[in-house]
Amino acid sequence: MGRLSPRPLSAALEAAIEPLAPATLLAAVQACWPAAVGERVAAQAAPVSERDGVVTVACRSATWAQELDLLADEVSAKLRELLPGGADLRGLRFSVGEADS
Image 1 (cartoon, helix red, strand yellow):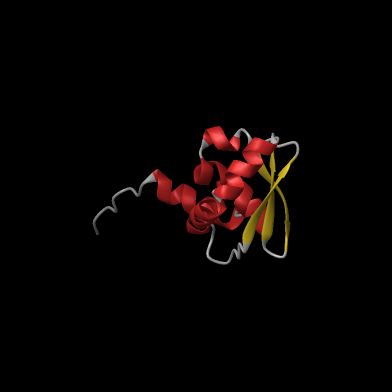
Image 2 (image 1 turned 90 degrees about the vertical axis):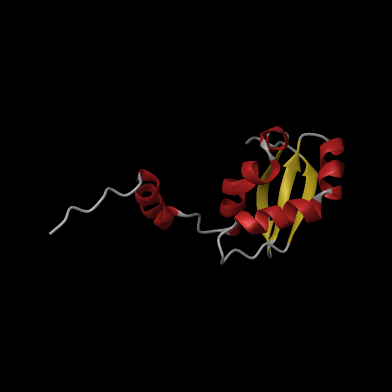
């Protein structure tokens, strides 16, 4: 009987982390937000609530809220690519508020 080759650590970590995936849409969006928008934007805006599939993102200023509102379709599409299969993101809403990320 031959010896099995070692499997990559990333495969083992993925299997261990998968059951810990966020249980709510908001938590799932929060987990992938920096990857979807980039660190610069994530420092200025953060998902803070969800209702009926629409996630509200608090932005540090009205300028950021307006800019992200213009990019909402693009950001939503990127989030849908990154979210787990069962997540049903229907839209994004941007408001001015504390965006602690």
